[in-house]
Length: 83
Image (cartoon, rainbow, N blue to C red; front, side, top):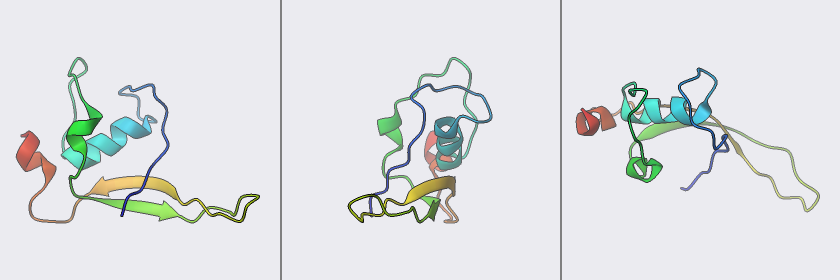
């Protein structure tokens, strides 16, 4: 499955920054303030995603919303890769 989650393009270490929270959950660690990240480096890593069903639009399509990204429950995590 492919899911897309909407978040601001502004990336910060503020607690309300969804992009940062999602990457921390996927990587299993916090990031340094000046650390450079490429979101493409996180594609394909295991995680759990909480999704809520959206309401139908004018054409009757329903877009589901990514509410939260959580660490993977698996024994091998991205933290093993990212250190």
